[in-house]
Image 1 (cartoon, rainbow, N blue to C red):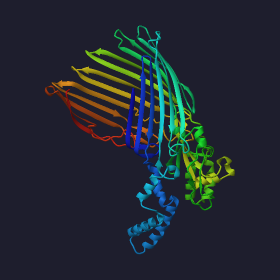
Image 2 (cartoon, rainbow, N blue to C red):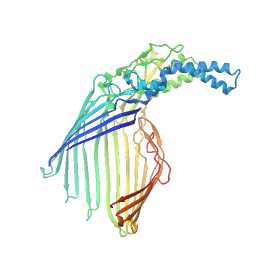
Image 3 (cartoon, rainbow, N blue to C red):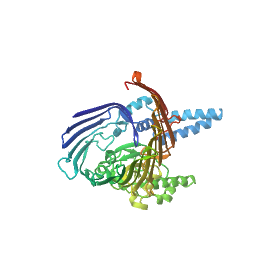
Length: 577
């Protein structure tokens, strides 16, 4: 069987930065062959951003910098504003003098402006990021092959399955998103697995065991064993107990491994695997204009991956140092002396090689149906505990554009660079030094009373166990993104009276922290009510539905940075029902 899918259109992609993708083409092709014992599948997936995609942050920065470099712009603006205001106030009101001063300051600060904003924007959109523009290119793809063997009819003592998978990635952004400026990057992964299922005790007890081995180009191989057991007790086998222990892993993404992205504001994302760090060379970064008493080394620099790894400060210590220097200068201490007095606050950053993320999960549950007061009740109770090792997070370091931090107090050029804002920040995916634990559970109950009135309630509890952060700041948080408490209730009946039915659903969840590469924000608690009335008209074989969602009318967010969800009211007519 052959299946192909195509998708073409425009898209806005929000990640560590924001991209506009115009004329993007996605295609997926699948070939599947099946027999009684063997199933084989092959995939080819390609995503082409098109020729009109760009980074919105770099576009805005490029337009701004086409007028003047920030530091020079502020200096020019401030000087002209002060002089103009001082003269204008002598013959004008304060308000008029302020307007005149701003007008003259902007004219002077933007005297190097070359072209209209639209013209500058078009130039940047057609100029690659690697050449100082905002244009992005990506024509990456992968191929994937799976094969599964079902030996159920061949082996009689148990149900046995086994299989294998292979995937090859080809990154092709021409140096705009990955370190593939000269040639595409190709890496692969493969895996093999087997699963055994055995039924015992008159098929009441079902035991399942499986193990899988996976290997990816840049990482050690991983074994993922899993075991589970279910038991059905009772005369009608209506009391079901279950328990499992599972392990899994997550390989870092292509961007985690091979990124070369300019996020704007002198922040860069770099893939954290050995081959990428050896190949990486940053964009050219201009040094800031000189400051009295602080030495300047050159006019611009480019940093290699090795330089960044070996010559960076922790973000936390750099921020503390910078704040202390500013406070000292505010107290009339010279910039040079302020830097020297606070250099002890700076700490060297350590960037360890990236490893796969691993999780161990214990789960147990009970499900039953029983008669109570003449009504059938169904109940399900479950609980889980997960331990995540080597959790992948983002670590940002501050790298001086000149100086050697390894020389200590004998070389103060690096602290001078930090003190005069001659540094860049680099974001790496790294593994958290501490485990991340998740645990929770839930209970659901449903029944039908009063001749078909369906009632259901469900409660879920989910908890992320906080861990103490060390001297390095992990900017992305837990990614748990789940409320601690969630409750749902439903009430409905197919026929309240002749041909008329209804259904009501209410759901509530408390507030929670949403964390991502782009933003950390608290999502507010919400209560949502949905309702619907059904009317069947057999004479015309039709069903009419009238209903609405979020009937309380308060808009709510499911994640930061996306649109609010409001209310929807609808009427539908289903014919031939």
